[in-house]
Length: 96
Image (cartoon, rainbow, N blue to C red; front, top):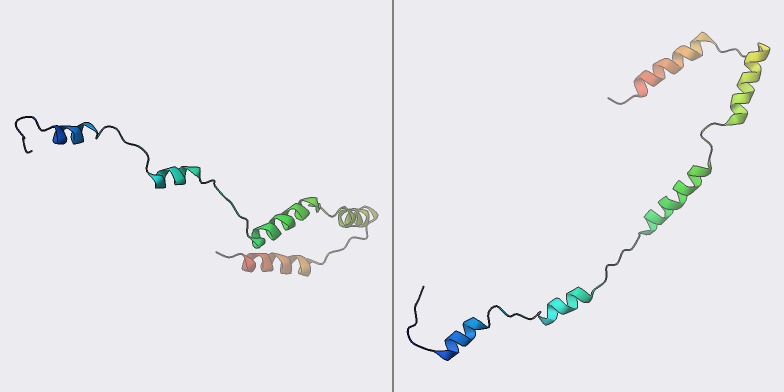
């Protein structure tokens, strides 16, 4: 550190002003900017599709009722071969 002996008003005045700062023009402009968000057309389409999917029921009641009626009437018949084929396909379709 350099010491300056004696009184030098210009030097002391410069160091005395260091604590007082004012925001620069760029800082003032930056604080005035507002945040913006834009949604892509893909995201908008995705949002529309997801809303429509919520309206689709998870269970197709007419199919369930049809099978229940066949079971209750004794006419529901599934071959063992069909069951085995479905089991084998489900095992090989799973990705590890």
